Image 1 (cartoon, rainbow, N blue to C red):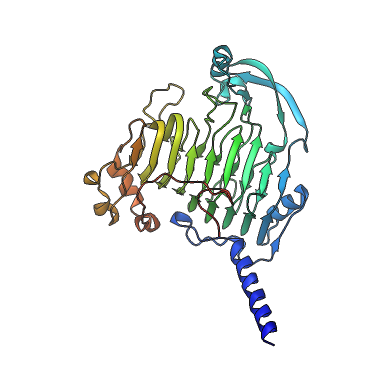
Image 2 (cartoon, rainbow, N blue to C red):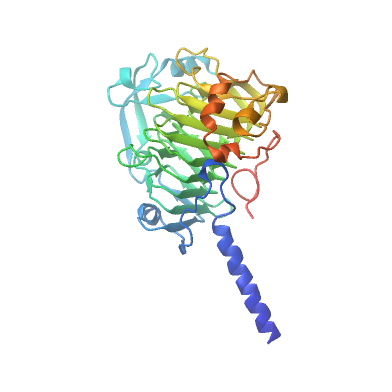
Length: 410
């Protein structure tokens, strides 16, 4: 009898551990309260078709990924006229061992295609799968097991509220071409007029993407947290011809609020993140306790209608932590507001937020600091999850060996 009781208790403990492992922890920052698929029975897709169907299902789902889902070549290739921009031609002439990126033409041809600077015509070939993104609807948890949950050749389009994406790797999306595809796209609901709510991206890894790692546009997402993740820019194809991916985070949106906390952002060369910069943007961003390492060219770009609090971040070998307006191809990205303390004596957070802000640390990196800082804090003040956030001292972060991202998932 005692043995039966022991076995029953052990089984209960195992179930409890398995249930807890579906989603580890809870989001801090603006996505506080996100539950994803909640208590839905976990499902384990085996094929790409099963994964597509589960994510677009209107019912709550907890989708566990324990294998690689490779969408490359499943939807064919296209060869069409593209653009070879001046930076690609310069990279070819430089012949330094790295490759640049040609550009897939958008509607309107070369003159209306972003990234096609002084372009000339060239044929480009690309995989079609990234242009039919995985449609993720409301009340979903997507959770990888260990380091086995990988999606190759296709990104996610988040088209619902209350979504958790945890411990997966998105990679190999036409990395050789600008406009080759985004890893995660958010544009809001109702034709981009209503912002998404409760979006949590945690312990994810993104690498080898043709365009943006994360793109937020149109209505945006009003309560979103990106945490504990690995954004890896190593690539042979680069706008900056140095093996560092350029197109990283594009944070636009009419009603956007994003917390970026505790992420490892490395070997990139631009848009870390690019915030605001359009007349219809209204973007509040909290960038806290991230580790920026080995980033060439420029990092944060703070444009019109962007309001940023950057605190407790650690920069190592990062050329320009804050873009200074030196590139004619990146206009208007110095007009926004950012509060970024470097010394405790300059802290204004107590008056505005009721707490101290944590200073940022620079090591072998370019200049950083506030720009219209009082304006940024005033805009952030109405967001209690930011005001109550307890930042840590800036530190260098380490990636987990057992799962994706920063820190171990228990």
